[in-house]
Image 1 (cartoon, rainbow, N blue to C red):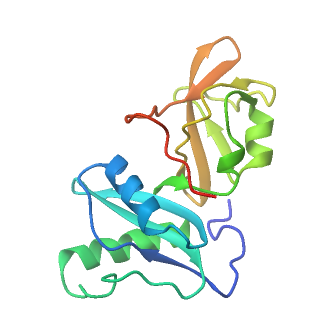
Image 2 (cartoon, rainbow, N blue to C red):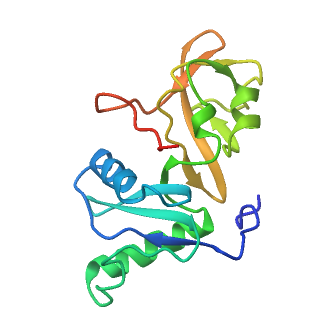
Length: 179
C-alpha cells in the first residue's frame, strides 16, 4: 500500500476549515457552504473528543478567514493533527471525493472502484474481497474513509450478491458537492 496516495500538484494543499461542530452532518453542510466556489478535491470530517472538524484538499492558495488565528489553543492542535491525517490519507471520513457525482442508485463493485477514488470495498467479518460483479445499491449517500493510505468504503450485505453502504444518511436529502 502506498500511504502517500496519488502525486500532488504543486498548487494543492490540505487545510482545516475554521470552526468545529457537534455533528458530522452539521460540519458537512457548513463546509459545503463555506467552500462554495473553491476547487475542492477532497473534504473530510474528523471527530476528536466529540468535536467534528473539517479538512479540505484544495487547489490554489485559498485560506478561509479565521483559519490561522488560533495558533496556540486546543482547536489549532486538533486541526493540525486532522490536516496531517488527511495529507497522509490516514484518517478522515470523506464527504467530497473524485468520482462522487457518478455514484447513484445501483452499480457493480467494479464500476464503483473504476469510477471513483475508492480503493477498496470491505464488509465487516467478510474475509475475502467482494466479487467485482456484486451489486451495490443506495449509492446516493456514500462516505468512505481514509484508512492506511487507502480510500475504503464499508458495505453491509442486504441479499445474495447485493450490498449497500454501511453508513446511511441521517438527514433529509443526501449532501452532494455543488457543480
